[in-house]
Length: 115
Length: 111
Image (cartoon, rainbow over all chains, first blue to last red; front, side, top):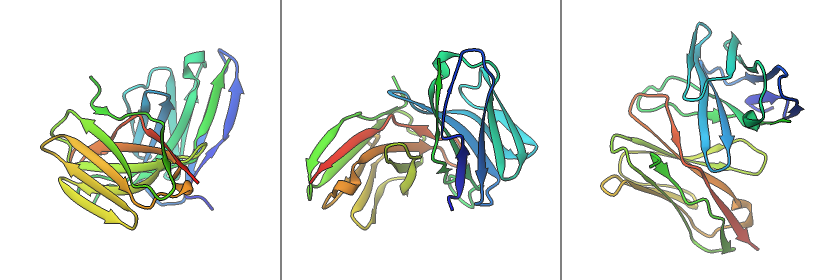
């Protein structure tokens, strides 16, 4: 079984709808992240969480919210979806580094289309 | 100017060729350099992780960092069709979670 899973894998929705993307991990990592990937822009950080009680905005958090339900679960919500939120969304996990930088492991992604 | 620049490709090579993938960056404080491989419709997968300058080898893959030129490279020897993917570079500062990603280079290895 995959260490980091995301549901759904694909979603088409309409402008104004509320959408939730879910991420689960079995790696036992404390840190979890949500990124979006757009052609020509690369991966950009939306939100990150270092533990259940610690949630922080990334560089592009406007229009998104998150919930860390447990160490293993981290959900991303679009309260009122708009077409420019059409993108690939990735969840990632890591542990605090013993030294240096942490190593992030990515899920398979959710392809979201907002019409 | 973006903090990390990466040629999007596509780069097409014949099977068995040596492939060179590159990124340049502007922040001299970056200490950690990563290469991820991303197959179509999959998440990025960590390939190599290098600290500061120098080379690191893992099988057919070699990561090279030149901090004086702010330039990193990934070399793939004896390239295979299964190496066809998008390769992302990523960089971070010491002691931080925050990665800065390149936009990725799409590689096609032709059989």
